Amino acid sequence: MQTGSAADAEFFERLAELNDRFAASLPQTLGRVSAARNAFDTVRPQPELMQELHAVLHTLAGSSATFGFRILGHQARNIEQRLRVLMTFDAVAPEEWEAWLAELDVFVAWALRDPKDAYPNDESVI
Image 1 (cartoon, one colour):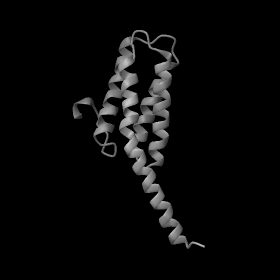
Image 2 (tube, rainbow, N blue to C red; image 1 turned 90 degrees about the horizontal axis):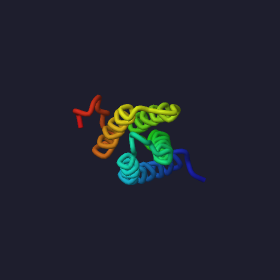
Image 3 (cartoon, rainbow, N blue to C red; image 1 turned 120 degrees about the horizontal axis):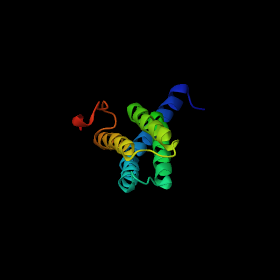
Image 4 (cartoon, helix red, strand yellow; image 1 turned 135 degrees about the vertical axis):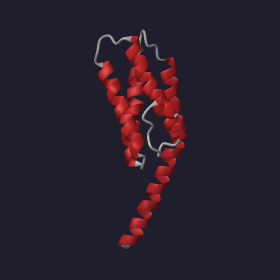
């Protein structure tokens, strides 16, 4: 039978492994976001790309908090929620999509650089 401190040490060791695995997978996940973003047509938004971006951002938001990337999760959630709002409308002006994509670009660039760093307030930081 394990003592509390041995069980705690094992738990935190396993958590550290999972955190490292999450961090290692982050560039690939952000690559998926970038690929969908680059294929996105602001004049005729493709429902399948909206769904993919929504799903990846939603998963990223939840997973980030679990694995110690609180700021990353918070920002992913903000961008996901804005996407969800845009998706509710029958028609969205291309400029609105472009503004959302610009926010997404800032998020991806920041997350690739250092997802545990402070989040920039605007694109000039990146």
